[in-house]
Length: 131
Image (cartoon, helix red, strand yellow):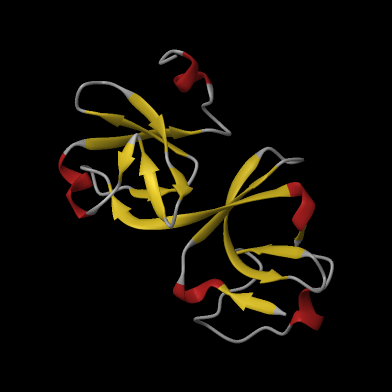
């Protein structure tokens, strides 16, 4: 089973390479996650046989979904992002109970008061300051 992520934005943290990448395809049978660099669905379809072995092992990735919201500067907000509210409080964006949370439930009003300042993989130290 494969998921073409063309309609939903997903990014992944590669635990071995220590880098973030946009996801184009998730292949559950081969247990591989394919970065956007390998597949561009907009230019031409690429079949799994052509890229077998080129993706990242699913066990070495943390997948994060786009919330559908942007911060006050127009930056897309993903699960795992660290956001800062106007009062300078900082929180990790999480998906719980069917919705995205960053201290409070995130909704369309979020762009007026918060800013993405990092993510839990590359900037975890930002949350330590808050505790």
